[in-house]
Image 1 (cartoon, rainbow, N blue to C red):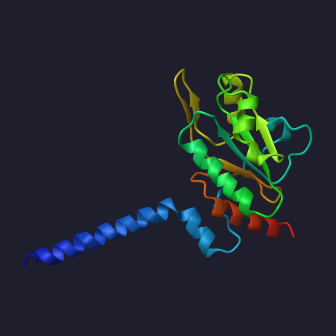
Image 2 (tube, rainbow, N blue to C red):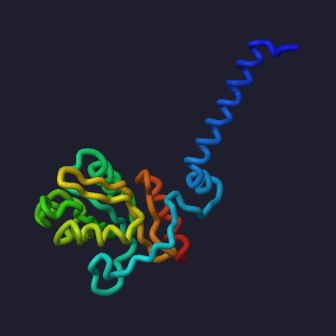
Image 3 (cartoon, one colour):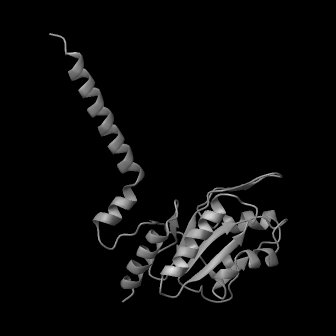
Length: 192
């Protein structure tokens, strides 16, 4: 006996719905874990150890610290990340340092970026490598896709959190200020 068309349609709809839910769970699994398990983080914890010399600090790294790469002519990712960091700055009550890595040393001087990011002073640390080769070397310490051609700069636009209560950098692939603040509070409680 053949299956009636309505049952076939219902079966297809249910299958598509289950596949969609599975894809959603797969894409946002780290966020689900953070929501279900108290003390787990929204960002992706890595084992990447950041050393003071990587960011040109003489001694220990100032902690905690949020790090991102940017350039002044960026029209999408960089302004969005600056906005997320601004929200963290305005809402997070604890100590925080901000490290901005200039990704376009040929067009962005330290002075240009300082004025572009002045609202983050005095807790701002600006790193503008001497040339594109130095940028590539610095960015190689981070799990970020970075490349530069004569006409274009491509970077993933991640924000990284360095905190003394983690085993490595925490990566935010889709930066969200509330997730960062929540993680900072969790990490702060881990240190007590």
